[in-house]
Image 1 (cartoon, rainbow, N blue to C red):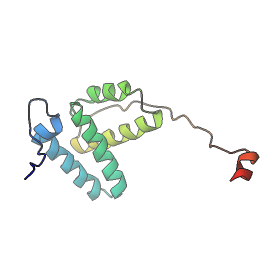
Image 2: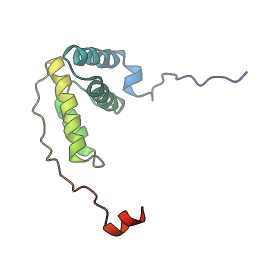
Image 3: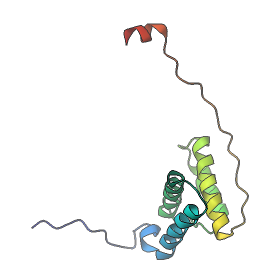
Length: 122
């Protein structure tokens, strides 16, 4: 009989899996979001963002560490960074953490408009 892959907690396991306190705070955040009327999609997105930070060993109790983590993510657009800031702002409000959110200017992009030639080929 083949053995199942089981997740083992080791010294190299990300903080999310080895730190029950962080897990508890994230579950508490989900309940807080639901109680405050946020949609399920918003709650789930914000949870995933906070979970990503926890997996990357970002101390969620330290706003400066969160700012640094967001700033270093060069692959993220400014629009995505705004969503991350919004997620942490909600978490900080729940935990009563004082922080000044960074401002990321959302760059508007023009929609793709196909040429007439491409439309006729379709």
